[in-house]
Image 1: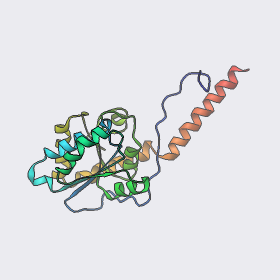
Image 2: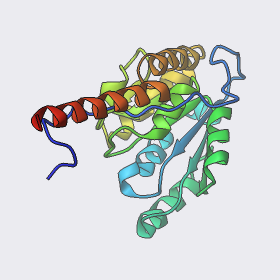
Image 3: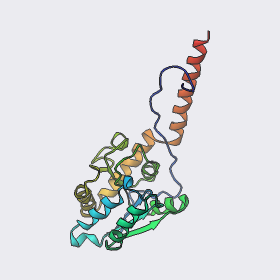
Image 4: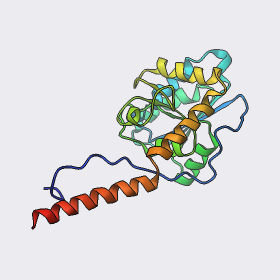
Length: 219
């Protein structure tokens, strides 16, 4: 039995505030591409897909990509499989769990958020990256392709396709202005659809409509 009567309301997309200290995505950076992956260490989050993608990058580009993989271990056998891959991959840093404030600070210092997940709904890390104006490279799963458009405000690829992910990373490395362009578009999309204020307004509307429906039924 539902908490409130009447038809099930449409899903309400979550929202986040723009983090303090968010860098203007148009500011120039050096030729290195700094990326983070925020996610618990488990097959669902796809760290293995990212590490295999990094191994496919051309030799002249590998030294320009730095990736911090941040998240606590959920699946230890999976961790034991990817740890040697990370150790053998130049530019990959498997950092483990960090407090949210520190993880967010590392996102703010990065150029790109990489989300190679096999399964998602709409990750909070994705919304935080959008709010901060970061370029996003993500698998097209769950609500991600509903929130973002490939080539406009993100680069999307099929889940588990490490070759496709490598191609998107290579594109970012070869087109220095692209990360800033994607980040600015993602930030605009966040302001249009995914702010905390919009989330509160939508939730208030859902609750108000449900209560009005309940009052109508009791007349």
